Picture 1 (cartoon, rainbow, N blue to C red):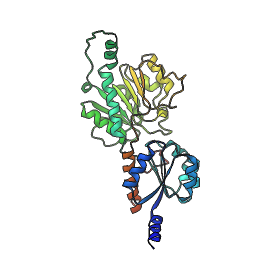
Picture 2: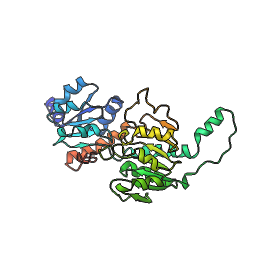
Picture 3: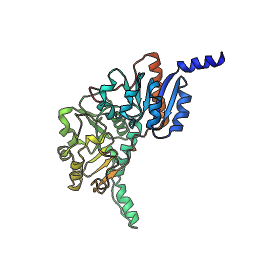
Length: 325
């Protein structure tokens, strides 16, 4: 009787298929502790996914999950994606007609804001010049720039853009923004609408891109955009590589159209060895590190949405497939 009782309890638990290639054991420990109401199938390859797919009612997955395998989940009721950018899911929207798909919201902004400010200070203090002088054993006195006299332009005022704007405001910067839709964000001194991109770019000393990747934003930062920026401006992309015309960026840097740039995201990651991005002057590349997926954050997002799911409450981060994010 005792065995049948526990079998019944296990049967009542929601079955969750988990797939994320990193920190699997860390996730296992956290999820089993924080979400005891679920039974997890921790998968590390396609074969394991196919084994458990027929039983799965919920999928907790990263962006590398094979999209074709969702068709092998007849009981699937909800997908929680462990990412903010969900292009692959948007591209396969047809198979999610009656299945809610959620992305991560409100987590990455605090990390991305630090990343942006780090490079704002890096350029303002001309740290590369300091390091070069030291390596040459040369005493090089100069007057650095100060951010409280500078304007940060934020492209995209979602959760991430708002966090970046607030962090910049906290250190005394003036903040302007550009988005397709105007929003009520107290940290922003002036907002520019969809038709005012050129005016927005002309005003900023630093431009940070936090836009989602949609048909409307693809290559929105192009040759004309770089020409509209100040020659002393610095460009920082922490959103999606699709939003920037990389050929135009390389041209702008080589021609001194802008002063410098930082890319944490690129159209192809990593760029191929022959890519001009690697040795482009005044360009810093980082390996998509500005918004890290930390297990404790991802588990908290899932735990909150799982409770909402059980109570039939609105899920956080529900993807709007028509808007593309």
